[in-house]
Length: 80
Image 1 (cartoon, helix red, strand yellow):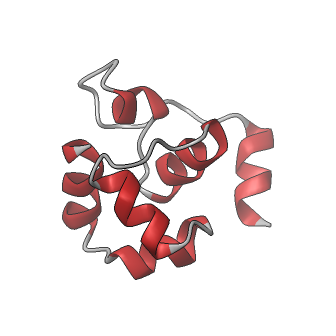
Image 2: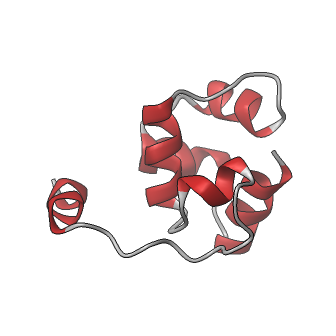
């Protein structure tokens, strides 16, 4: 889970800021970040959007930190 923490710190976010951006309770987010709890698909998606990265990067499937191009439908959902 060091990628998750590294990205959060790189973006200058606190765990409280991540709570506000993702809707994931700070204590749950802390457990996810420390590897004491796994995130759900939906939580991973929200975290990836908040940190402007891909779910594949968070899962360690790629070393490309940059997100993939988002679909127009996803951009619409982000704005709501």
